[in-house]
View: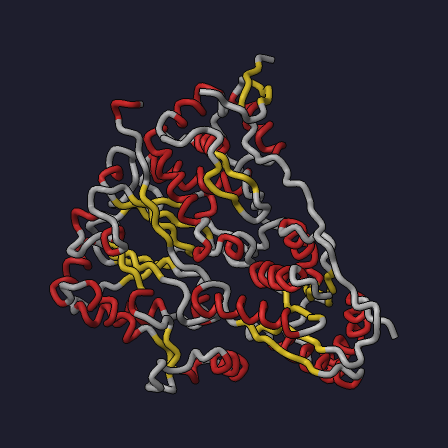
Length: 359
Length: 181
């Protein structure tokens, strides 16, 4: 295997390397692993792509992302080689034009790629999908795959807060966010299956998420009541999806397995559940002050397309823009919404793993 | 100190390209002007309406306006198509407003799309997003794109303030377009 990236001599001492990486702006503040040739080659062994293959061009500075350069960043992030195809799939997905990386890497918003993984790889690669899956569970895959994508955006795409990225606050997920769906506890087809992939494929879905928005209830056991409250909660007045076009963006609704079971007793078909959520995910137009109302009306956000409900503003134009994903612990009581930037459509890509025998 | 060798994790810098720019080099009398507005920004809609009147008073034959609504989806695709149509239909254009991260990116991209059709164009951004706008133009291969920088913030200003800004910056917009008296 021939590597062609520029070689740099750095201190062998981990603390000195960390200091150098901070000085060079290579990282996210946390320690990095040195991308030696051995480390990079081990990562590259888990993809069919040649090192010089150009996978994509990453905004905002349009850096050319060769597979070798991506592998270098993956090695720095601590990605185990077998997980590298998921990093490549995530980058492939987020550079699909409709994901709008051009806008999302430069916006004032906190939005960042949030990776949702389906498929058999979740357990062996340590992609958290049970208790603490959005932070705290500590699976290697969850902690490093998202970080590798973040490092690629920084080091290859040139995304830097306060500079090329105009993000006002950022968010913790800008360190990297990756979790799985607990498919085995889901009463519905997995997210990947709903997006056209088979259950045996390892698939990454990239969502432009603004943050983790926690929701809780302990007072009501009725599934319809609970779904009504979830719908109202995700349609909060200052949601980004009220700022733009109703047709764009999806809000991910992470539902714990206990609630999913309860909801499925009423809505065996997940599209019926999505329709119910959509039906209630609105706020009255007069909730907003006059200047906001003017813009909502100018943008055609008032009522549904067929002219009904001219006194309501719906979060989304279609039920499929509310995307349930089953994950989290069995303690029930909680859900998490991942609100959308709005001007972005989630994208999925299959991870192309190398057969074990050829590694 | 012991050392090891690693591979550099950053991409090589992309060479800056400055595509040709175009200037009117004449008065605006009889010309067709285009303005790109954005439904998101009340301030810019106000300024664009003010400048439309000023252009007409200066003898422009017609002012066409495209109001953008989205970055992606069918609406975003229609917006981009309307920008292309605008470029084909006018002699010069004013494109705004860059006063957030992604809206600056798209305002610059739309201005570049017009410049790629050989039309004089000026992109309008606010001061906070001026560097970002120029960087975006450079990354899109149009490093010399004319960029008019307005005060920041524009939102939360009174109409009197906006009218004053409109009057103060209109001559600079024409200057950047290469308008001669």
